[in-house]
Amino acid sequence: MNDHAVATQLARGAMERLVTLRQRFASEQRDPSEWGALADAAANSWLLERIADLRPDDAVLSEESPDDGERLRCSRVWIIDPLDGTKEFAQPGRIDWAVHVALSVDGVAEVGAVALPDGMCWATQPTPVPTPADHEGLRMVVSRSRAPELCFAVADRLGAEVQPCGSAGAKVAAVLAGRAELYLHAGGMRQWDSCAPVAVAHAAGLHASRIDGAPLRYNEADVNLPDILVCRAELAGPALDAIAALV
Image (cartoon, rainbow, N blue to C red; front, side, top):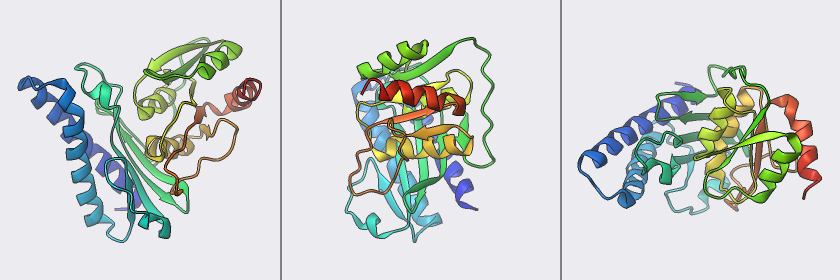
């Protein structure tokens, strides 16, 4: 398998396990406050084992594993979030959570897959094709729990409707699926939150950058990567101008 196929297989496989775990937790009437930690650990363990089997010479940066810094010596680093949207996972009926599997090569998000609980998996190959929007006006997806005031101010300048959503992967998927035109966040993120969604967004021809327009770089020593703008390419200029006028 090439790297794109590996990413897709891993993301889909971890998602299948998470969906099964969620169903089991619900049937056992397990306390929802326990769901996230148990699911994160299970998905992380499976992903690490599969990466070790399929790409034993590559490094890994995972939200759920200690970072010993060895990855900084490597060109190829798998950056994974075994369960992005832990709060949403623990709320039966919510589907705005995801599995992120990405490969950073020399700091660039080159390969990625974002698996969703509805069975959809957006990946860098085959080339993803964004769904045309069937909606008049702009919609911006933002964090469901910690959207910064900047998002609302930018949305106001652009005349966009704000739509709260969980996982970063689910937000980028909303743009890809034609359910939104922009995704903006400036309230703190980590590399594993955005690497896979950004790889897919770039493959689909969307704009993806820091909120000042700078490229998103991965496998940096500091795992913090606090802000992001993903949008339809033709909206990048107006969105970046609106952000610059407010910060």
